[in-house]
Amino acid sequence: MKLLLDEMISPKIARELRGKGFDVQAIKGDRPDLEAVADRDIVRRIAVEKRALVSNDVLDFQLIHNRLQAAGEEHYGLVLTSDSTMPRNKASISLWVKALEKLLRASPAEDALRNRVRHLP
Image (cartoon, rainbow, N blue to C red; front, side, top):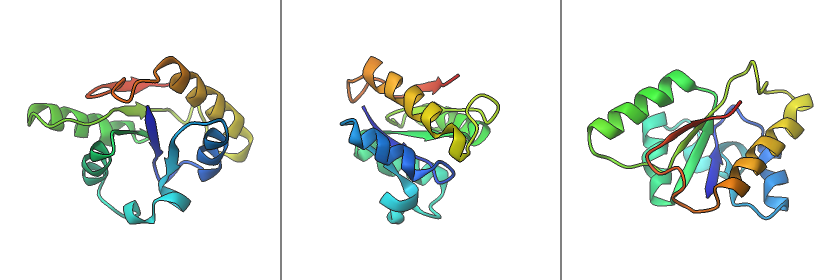
């Protein structure tokens, strides 16, 4: 599975996961072509790359998932988090790396989350 970290998630997490051999990019730093792009368009564009999106914007991305499913469109997965369990601060970077590494090791197939939403603890 390949991941893209949404704009609000530290690019350091992507760098650390790449150092462990995973294909993980962050919008900030790695993908300037996706900065300030509408969320639904990001999901559509990365579907072509067979890449799942990681975000803490649960409400918006759950709605996008529902609309894509209703329209018969595919995506390659949404991994949603909560600030209460996975805060977005420097002290939590190792928590993010461990959680995403566990997900990537458990679901190595590129289509493991196709058309699915996964909530991390």
